[in-house]
Length: 330
Picture 1 (cartoon, rainbow, N blue to C red):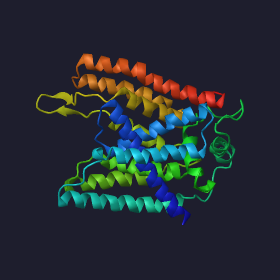
Picture 2: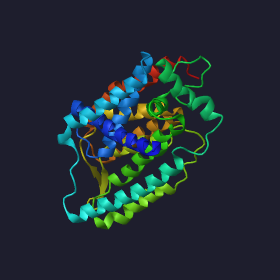
Picture 3: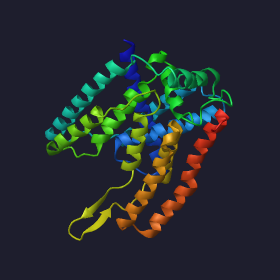
Picture 4: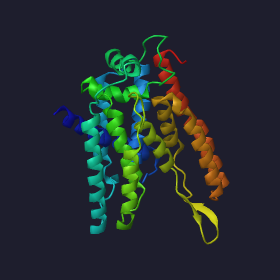
């Protein structure tokens, strides 16, 4: 019974984060076509706000509940921007088959990983269990100058763990990553594929590939959440393709707001410090790709300047906030 309630709560995660993503799109006056990417943008916003709550020592369970409820209210407010339903029978059949595969994979994961049979008695018992419990009890991740926070994680994952622990026993703590994170990765892998029967085998292969790749769980740190953030940072940018007629690279000419990608990068580094290298490489190669696609130099320079001003503010603000709330950075 607890497992079923936990799954329903994780579905509420998706709805609430989707609402926060819609709010950011409304403020930035930019529409993201992919609904799963919108959820990840909302997730990044919650992780960013979680750092602010820790800084002011009010990161209690009730404050996170308020943010979750606000996200659901935002979905109702921006309901006009909800994704459209399939138009014909072939699209409906495609969606139903994909949903069945996702449900089977998620059901297997829930009943085998929620809760898991064992935890890492070093990493989990000494670190990752202590962080969210301390935060919910004291309102901040601050513990001791000798704390390991800042080396393995800045505390972003503890925010997600804290939201879970606020309502469920501690064995269900990894539902934030093993279930919610896996769901994001599965749905995002097929969200970029057209709703056509001819693409159904490709979609199924994408789902099975993510499922069968061994995540090598050794603790409850960020794995699937980190993967989802990385995938979203790629899908957020416009598509670039090679035109076979003129043998040139082409693509959409509108770049997403720099604050979106900055929040995702910041959340990625906040959930696990080892992920800091990905944003550097990802941004570098994307700029090269845009240059090859023939994007106007003025637009590319303008976007880059905005990113390094507003974008890096979000990144360094997130790192600063979590470091300040921990009082240590090894």
